Amino acid sequence: MVHYKLTYFPMRGIGEIVRQLFELAHVEYEDCRIEREVWPELKHTAPFGQLPMLEVDGQKLPQSKAIMRYVAQKYGFAGADDWESAQIDSWADQYVDFLVELRPWFYIKFAGGEGDEAAVYRDTVEAKRDVLFPLFVRQLKENGSGFLVGKTITWVDLLLSTHLETFTSLKPDYIEKYPELQEFLKRVHAIPEIAAWIERRPKTDL
Picture 1 (cartoon, one colour):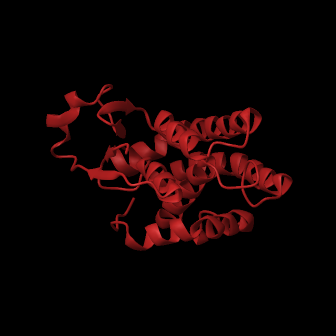
Picture 2 (tube, helix red, strand yellow):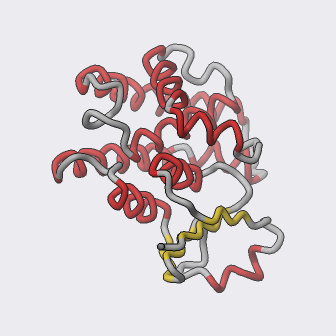
């Protein structure tokens, strides 16, 4: 039996997608959460000096998207064929581009940077959200299954749902004008394995 060990900080963050993939697949894994205070002492043990990191029978795999793709491909959450897999990658890449554009707000909100947080939120997060989210809404409608690509849930759905969950916890009105995305989030969280995981996972702010 393969032994999986996922190492990340004590938060949902980008590690949450991998955890949810394991839950959906009914695969046992070690959920190793390390405090940021001790991370500098352990940083040298990670191939790229960053987290998350997945160990597969002791072999180390860094980079969150590589980990997501690996687990998703192994357990059937990466599309039904090569075309769906490519579409999933395309949406994931577009989402990552979106996150990069939010860095000015992240810097003020979480890194103690200077600036008008409300103004930067309006000009970056809300502005970029209102470019990307209509595309997600259109894709959900055109795909017709309730998920972004294919007939069943894939890892890019978890990427989006985790983002929506985190940002609505920070800004309750974040998807107020996107009822389709509100329903999408409810749909993902209603999947029995996801619902059970949310109920028992450690409670964290992010």
